[in-house]
Image (cartoon, rainbow, N blue to C red; front, side, top):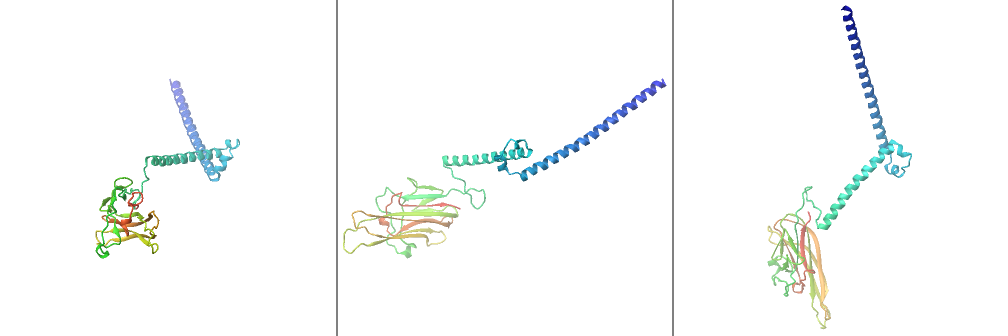
Length: 286
């Protein structure tokens, strides 16, 4: 019985020693392979960075010979080049598609005001001459300048809804455009004149002074403020045909809510109120 007991103890010690040796071998192998893997990763990273630093992507792509295709550096730069090319092509295609869609639908790119990313509301107006009227535009009479506060004769009849005219977030009252929002506005106007023939009378040709004014009227100030002025001298025609002349002007001005814009001319009775020749407008730009 003692012999059997000794044999079992010896067998247990042998098995324990074998397990211990196997554990040590696994631990040593794990440490060894872990170091080898770390060394390989570091070497690959350094080589990849070196490829990116020293490589010329364009020349590498153009000179893609059979010898270079087996070079790891060439493969890295080739993959990077394709990735950059695909990213840029996708972005360019997206921008082109958006621009084409806006062009087809008539949409305008969003404008921004002082706050980045905040769209600027559409505020615009284009009013035209009243083509249906056979009478000359309504004038203010012969009131002196001191009682009116402005030069010329006011044009009180504009069309704001038909033909080429439109009003977007602006109102037209008595020939005046009402400003709804503070900001920088682009203001423009054109007036068209038809001067009748003076005949073959003696005394030579006479000159007519044609002047166009654009005024701003503020609620806090009683006298209108002259924003811009355009003028020219025209000779009265002597032949059978009338003389045709136009005045055009445009500019920018900072306007406040409730400001009013209106147009005056020196010879309102000679105006041709064709909507394509006589017009007036403004729109918010910033």
